[in-house]
Length: 128
Image (cartoon, rainbow, N blue to C red; front, side, top):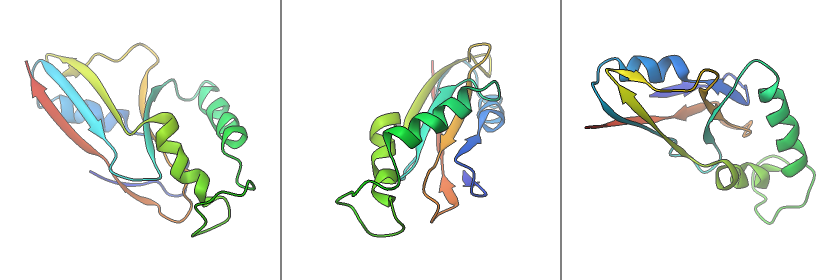
């Protein structure tokens, strides 16, 4: 799936996951982000947790620190550390074509790289 982040750091992909799972039965849905500067997470969105994540990322991966990885814009080295901290894949159990997310869980793409707004996320399914 092609994702245009529109410059957003957090992009909600829950609807896309639900749509993908609706064509399946019981099993496991897997989402993978094949990028060196983006990540996937399961978290609550819209109630402040997303803003807390942005604050934490700004502290943990400041744009002003001198990184050894220096091509691109200032602080781009931080973008390359993001997937190591947050991860690039998630797996969700699926029952009768519905992902069994918790009440407040959403699937989100996290992308701090301002140089690339086009991302891919690969969904796969293991029936069971």
